[in-house]
Image (cartoon, rainbow, N blue to C red; front, side):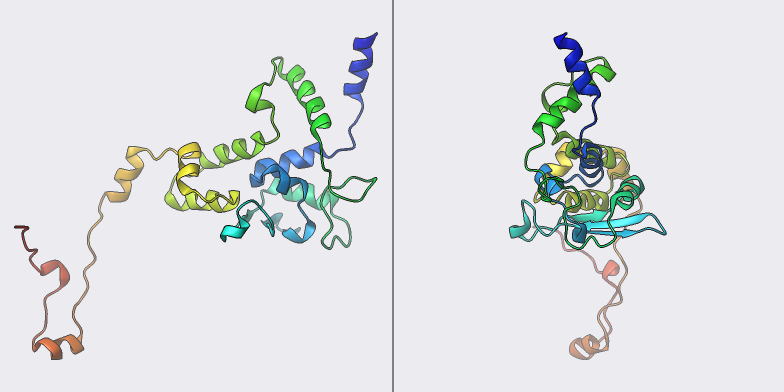
Amino acid sequence: MAQEKKNRGLRSPSVVPLRGYCLIGYYTMMRPDCNLHLRWDEVTLDASNLTGWYKLDQHKNVNKGIKAEGPLAEELVEYLLSIRPANPGNAPIHFNPETGLPYVDIRKQWERLMVIASRMLRYDLEDKKRTFFNFRHTGASHIAQRGKTPAHLLAVVQMMGDTSVATVNRHYFKMEPELMRGLVLGWKRPDVDVPSIAAADLFGTEQPRICEIPLALAS
């Protein structure tokens, strides 16, 4: 009887927008507190192209001058467009209908979701796999697989609002030897005509190109 009552509880719908929190956490790699308090004025949506951008006013490292912003994936844009009110202003994207304010604690609803997910997967989600914070790491790991250049690394750092390039590189990127060899292959010093007419006036003669200047041997 108790088990049947528990199963009925799992089948009943939750008013907490867990799907939305999961999509935001995965596609933007926001920390949970930023996710819970995300406002409409921190998001820009283009309905015609299904694109968007987020820019957080407040996050863990904002006082260090670190930005947390980036593009929005199409699936997330579609979700946000489906719930966006006519005049959103600076209202929270997800809020408790009883208070009109962002949810403070969703641990009970999250634990319920983990029970359902474990049953569907037929194994127990444990430790880090069971935490809401895991969506940030999962999203970062998956987007890192889409590109491994230094520019991609810096883009992920900015999207996550992180302070350490080394940390993001260590956890999510794998700089393979072949990639580094490709960067160096064919790399040559640029030829620059130096100096200019002003330098010729100074030295009394035209100077050779940089690449033609013999390098002094170390003594």
